[in-house]
Length: 134
Image 1 (cartoon, rainbow, N blue to C red):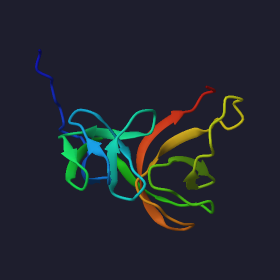
Image 2 (cartoon, one colour; image 1 turned 90 degrees about the vertical axis):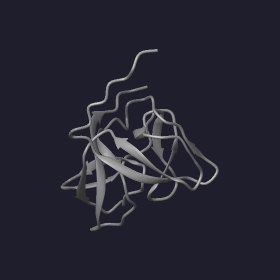
Image 3 (cartoon, rainbow, N blue to C red; image 1 turned 180 degrees about the horizontal axis):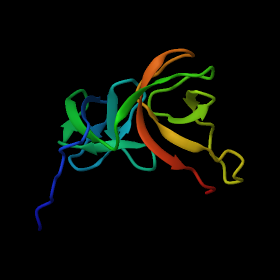
Image 4 (cartoon, rainbow, N blue to C red; image 1 turned 180 degrees about the vertical axis):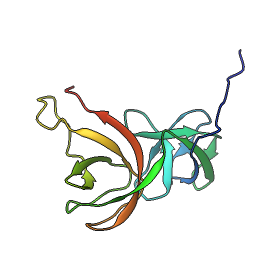
């Protein structure tokens, strides 16, 4: 087995609590859990980073995040921790559910790292992309 190379000079590394009943696997995909500040092993396109160690539920574990975190203003529809974020004017809100018709394709600017209501300033993991039709 070869040795993996790490270059983390400009990485954002944050500490999370492993969600109840969940695990964290070193080198595995970390996704946001149901509560602010919690993460768990995950799949799909909602990943926030890579676990730096394995850990059991309730333990604290570091995650190398996929991007920088910036403070953004929450719009009228609100923000939910772990949800994808879309822009509405100069604010950000939870992205609508995606469907295969293309009717809800939106530019995704990040993933909320906190829950908030209109006017709140919350952290958003910057991960700009455009959801295409399934």
